Length: 401
Image 1 (cartoon, rainbow, N blue to C red):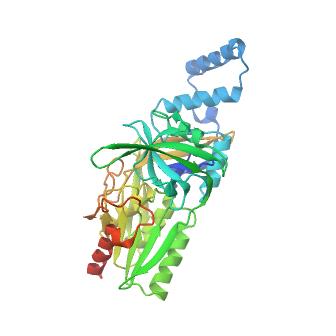
Image 2: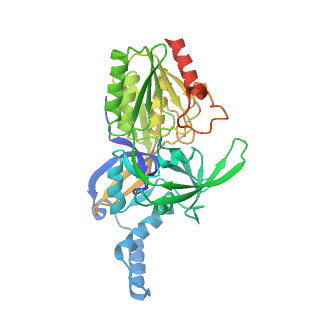
Image 3: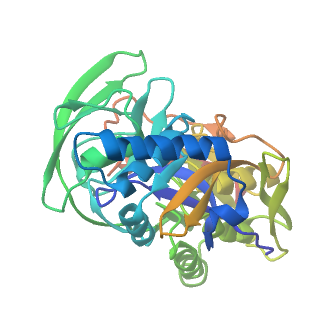
């Protein structure tokens, strides 16, 4: 498979609280940027900022930390863009971010995004087995306050700061939930932060030799584990058809998702991105692929790298997509390391499915639309008898087999 330097990471902004939101990104660029060499200064603007800094240091009543002033100026510029995915990471946040991409966290276990219309942080999905999932938080819930402090109109970074804390400590979260009739329910939960390990691959075998692989995220180990599980299912357990469950999978590393897609689709495009200048970069598959009847499950919690995989399967027609429309996260960020081990993340690209279908704000539409029953009160520990989406996936697979 041809590789380009594109990655799709879940942005971990929680800083040891496991508050995340999906963000498709170009892979972390390790070179240190010398701003003077790479970009021309706007001398007038720079002098203005320097003047304000000097005035504050001379006149402001209290002590001033130079680093805090600079970070505040950077954050102010990025926040003025009103783009929740364009952010600055100081040294502490940057270090924590790189640790947390390995799939082990301390926190409450929430993947979140930002609803620009409501100006609220929205729960994309809790992690199975996490404090958030055990407390009954669900995709689509909004965070209204943290420890009695209202966070209406707060940014993801601000909510992250409020949720910081060590494992064993408690945090109270106020939730707003809308039902299908747009009726509002407000409630609060007290969550105890703890260490959370994510198992990215779960396997089962259903009747009639149907294999099932649930991908909870696209972490560093997911591709290797997927290969191992798939070989076990097909060789030892002799399955004749495969279900890949991407429900509530918020994304992860794009090269992991495209490596898995490479096993499923024929030679051609898997995904491509377009930047501000119209420059297109494409990830391709090769000719070696799994030839097995396939169904992919998605829902409103399937985002980012999940949508790349589902979109490729759908466009090539190598499997049926079952469930409900995915989240619709299709803009790309670039992570740029600065000279002092901090970095900025900037929205730079948009990605599209092989047929050129727009993902951002649109999502992936299933071939077979199936809602869960209205009396299902949790997406986790869902009994098979009530999992109408999985049941439909099995029936569709039987037709293909």
